[in-house]
Length: 330
Image (cartoon, rainbow, N blue to C red; front, side, top):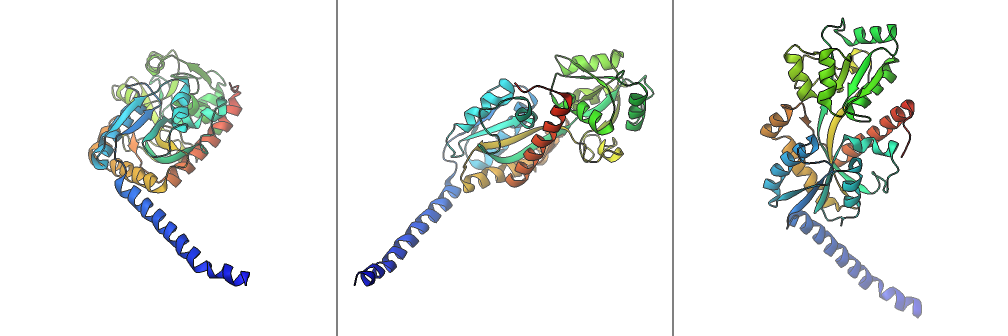
């Protein structure tokens, strides 16, 4: 008799389970419709006025209009973005705390012992924008192409000097990646600021730099520098006449100063899709695209899955470069 009594409860249990699933589905649909109901905090891992801050504020303004809630910028510079990232990792995964990181995000795991796992403890939302470096040389040098540079570097191993804004920044890493892929020996000269490095390229104190676009292109157009290539996989819309290093015999060569948007781990999928959708719409806004392109940045706005793949590749790529140049992990 007992087995029959037990089976008698099965239809009731099934009805309860179906009701629970229906409630959960309705709640998910509701969260997608109602999010957000209050302002969102965007933590920016850089000081006000930096490139990541500029990109973050531009996107926040566009996204706020469609979300119907303000996105408030919270600058948390320091420790190469670790302070800002750790704050986000500890936040509630409800979409009301999001994180904007610069390209140092891809380098940090190789040079520092992090108190979190970047891909496990965060939810990638989208890659907002990316700006390639531009390879510039002193115009008095007989270097007009990348093959010219490679030939001179091989003829004078260690004598060509490339300046950067500091160790492990995008210009430095671009130079180190080039050395590895082109099999050349050049000497890195770090400066406290990108402008100081370019001043020395102009004066001839050093020979070249893998510089950021805004300052370098202005000097190149004035004839004080010669720009010979960009470091993106495809040609930049800002300077379409310049070839990429990748197309000149070094396939896969890519470096960029980029900005990505992430949230805490376990961000609900409806919330993730809403944030991603509005960021992608902002990336397609003609006015925003043109504004950032003036500084050499191109908007992206890809899917969470594509951004996760991008970040994974960046971390793996720079791990190899950091190992090759012998940087010690802190």
